[in-house]
Structures are given as structure tokens and as C-alpha cells.
Length: 92
Image 1 (cartoon, helix red, strand yellow):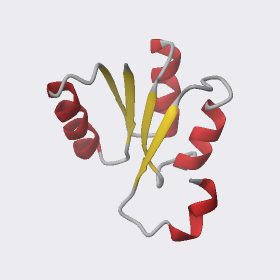
Image 2: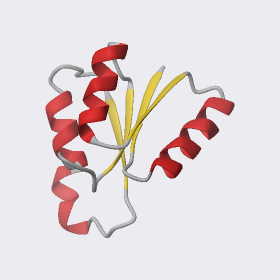
Image 3: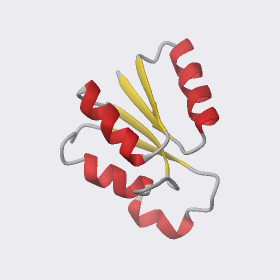
Image 4: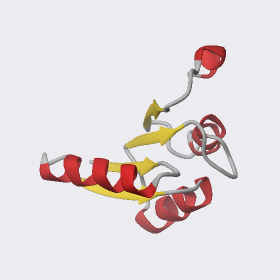
């Protein structure tokens, strides 16, 4: 299983990736921007699970998922955020 963690706080993303790797969750990638996420997918060919902060740049997490999903229809997404996302429930 390939998991890509996208968060603009590198320490959080790396820590989560290390914890998942220690738990045996497969191939992990880390990106701090939506552009880095797309580059990682292009280099690694696929992603099964996208763990993504909603507030990233240049694309927000929802838009990143929406741009990737047509190319990876089986990809699942887990959104994370330190912000109240209740106004975005329709996009989750």
C-alpha cells in the first residue's frame, strides 16, 4: 500500500509517516505542498491513500484530491486539519 501524507507542517507529516511505517503500513511519502504531492505521485506511479491537510498551497487539499482522483479512481482520501471545516462538509 502506498500512502502519501501532505501537510504544510513538515514535522507533523514526517512524524505521522514514521509512525505509520513503524506500524507496517507500506510505502510512505511526504509532501508539504500540493505541487510536491503531484511530483511524488508522478515519481512513484500511484497512491492508495492520500492523507491530506485541507489548508495547503498552492492548491487546497480538496482541490488537490479533485485533480488527482480522475487519474487514480481507487485512491482513498483522509483529510486532516487544525481548523473548523464545517463549512466544507459538502466537499468531504
